[in-house]
Amino acid sequence: MDLGDDKARFAKVVMPYLDDAYGLARWITGNSADAEDVVQEACLRAFRGIGGFSGGNSRAWVLTIVRNAAYDWLRKNRSSAVVNVEDITAIERMADDAASADNNPEAALIARADEARLEAAISNLPAVFRETMVLRDVHGLDYREIATITGVPIGTVMSRLARARRRVIEMLGAER
Image: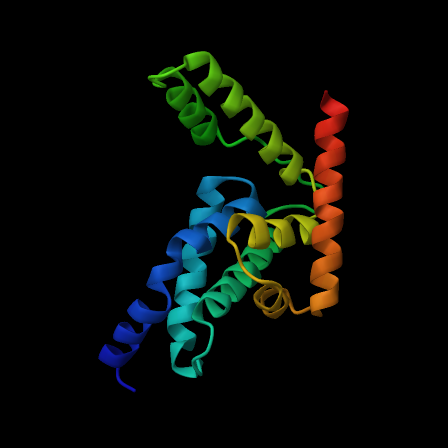
């Protein structure tokens, strides 16, 4: 293949999933600036490997690359005892959304607070549970796709998802 074919294939295979790629990277790294770095690296890897893509589920292929790039990035740039810090832009966006709610500002604020508590609970999950939950409940992937991306059997995906959901429910219940 020549460079033009690679560019066209990249546009068809990778570009439709950039939002999903960013979302997954954001959940793994914990903030938007790091997620942007990870997605950029993942795109470079995907472009270099686009000739080896044999077809099939392009979304799973892209998200596998993003996942691997995110964990490589974390190993290089963070110690193993990193504490997630809230993303400033997300907090500002929540405040803006709550302030601009037309119908009922109080209800919008409560909804945003609930959303922030849920995001915090998910962020506090161990990485294997968090990524499984995000891939299933945020990105809507099926068990087989998650198994492909994470490299574990479907039964493990199901177990991790059940444990992740149970832990989130327990964390949210403990807050009340």
